[in-house]
Length: 80
Image 1 (cartoon, rainbow, N blue to C red):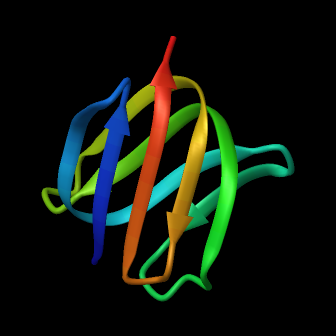
Image 2: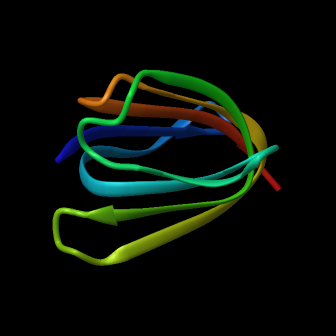
């Protein structure tokens, strides 16, 4: 599990555990799983994550950035 923090339009949208996070970058979609290599990247479009409950959650964003160190994933973005 990843510790996942999603901040959108300066408000916390989600803070908890996630099984996976999917984001769009300029080079295509990437999947963030526990143990992912450290990464900082710009994102745009859909963000999807799978919660502890195994349900998929989706949010459309205009732009933002994502950071992961393999143990946690933080996304800061602006909503359309």
